[in-house]
Length: 213
Ligand SMILES: N[C@@H](CCC(=O)N[C@@H](CS)C(=O)NCC(=O)O)C(=O)O
Image (cartoon, rainbow, N blue to C red):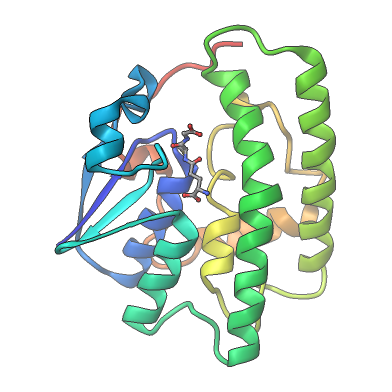
């Protein structure tokens, strides 16, 4: 059985959990006490992930990190959601890089600082992040204006990756998608209809926290 290290506030962990559920694969969660700083400790980095990040997937003796790598591994292994053609698979990879660099990363940082950060966020930093988010969301919204899924004619791991943080409650980020990005909104509804979709707080381990700032 797969073992997925992560925690419920982690959209990067959710990307993998959602795919495992969509694939109908059995997995067990391994709670990472991120909020108490375990990923910054020497032992965790030595034993679990030198990069100090969740998620981590164990498949027998194999240990994988980076959600994009894990998604690609699972899609290939189970022959689903990887893209129908070689061109599609390259396109999937292109969106995975975009997501990791610009879409998930700015949004996840913004949400973390607003909801869970140790001190009230600096307004100048938040304004800078927000402008970067606006640009990345506009690009994805435009891409989805003419298609149902990010790549090809069916859901792929590009969709699983890009959606990872978008099912959390609005009050955590304060960043409104509904009404501003209609094509992303419609795509999220389609994703909710995939097999295995559930709210991150219903499938990942850890305690739900109230947004702080
Ligand atoms: N690109 C990585 C990002 C992983 C990541 O940033 N995970 C967060 C938790 S959701 C983390 O562990 N951050 C620790 C840090 O940035 O120091 C992935 O997709 O797996």
